[in-house]
Length: 221
Ligand SMILES: [Zn+2]
Ligand SMILES: [Zn+2]
Image 1: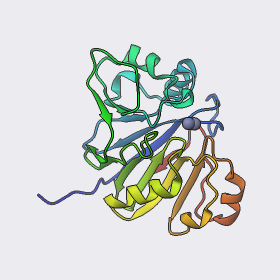
Image 2: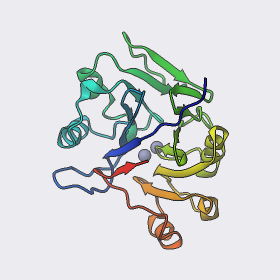
Image 3: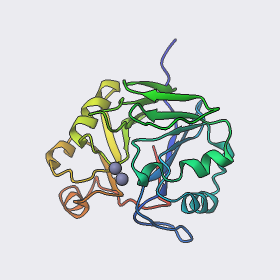
Image 4: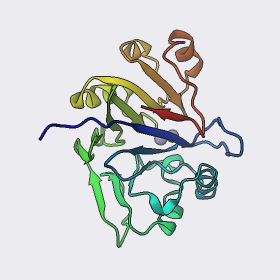
């Protein structure tokens, strides 16, 4: 079978330290929705507060029950904080949690992710890098787009892990205190979100490639 490229993929930032759309709330944390053809909608991370997550989802017209897969990058409060609330409104979504997650979630199909692998068509996990965090590699027409939570495992390591699935085109998510900016120079799209400490520096070095993040931002890939 010929491997098919995802014709359209869309990332909607649902939860972020900044806001891009009126009516949405900003808060420390990160969550985004990933949609594409031949795949269930994926919620990547859940922010800090379930009520803010659900508020922003409602404003963005995202129905909690429609989410087919929930991926949690790592178990910090600002990424897993809204998980219980979303599980209360969604009984069927499959969960992909980092292997270091210690609490049981009963009555759910849960994958404890340690190694790299496919989650669904055109969506791959890097595996739990440095025993803390997994990121996603999305196969799009433009190349691999990396979706990352806080990048505690290092932006460079994450890009290297994602490159196993194809040429890395871009990255979106929290970069934490990442400062090895040279590592981003081969990318065409850089969207520093959430906890990225050096947002201004990255925007300054890569003005054409850099896209400002915030709740409500939509990336059509
Ligand atoms: Zn974190
Ligand atoms: Zn974080």
